[in-house]
Length: 143
Image (cartoon, rainbow, N blue to C red; front, side, top):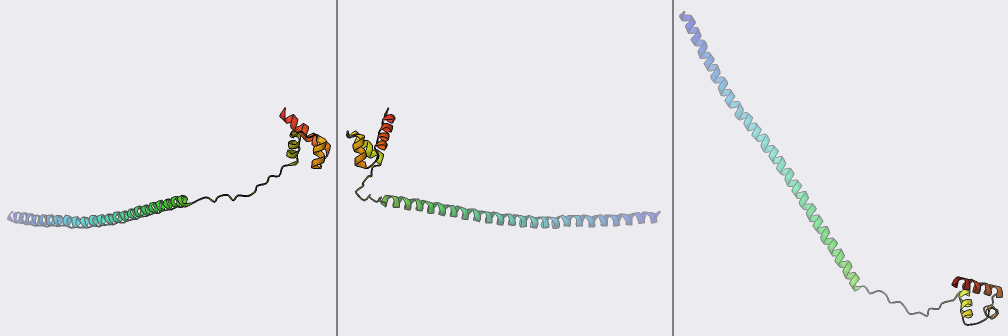
């Protein structure tokens, strides 16, 4: 029986030793995993920070480009207004404007002056029938 008791005690000691070794390994592994996870998170945060920095720089360039474009546009508008203020339209050149009356207008003018259709035809070198036709047409339009 002492043999069994010694064997049992020995087995218990081996078991306790194994439990202690496993417990120490289990405690050591989470710190390694935690370190690995912390490095991964730091890398992710660093990449995110770099991405945000690049995005901010693009936004700043767009804002500066827009501001420069607005300033350029305002300058163009100011220049155009200055050109408008300094612009003086050319004055029309005085010319002797001569109007040439049409045959119909001449006939009606002479008829209004009291001339007869035969006289108007002779003066304008037109046919008497043509003159009478123009006068009748005009009189019909008036009525």
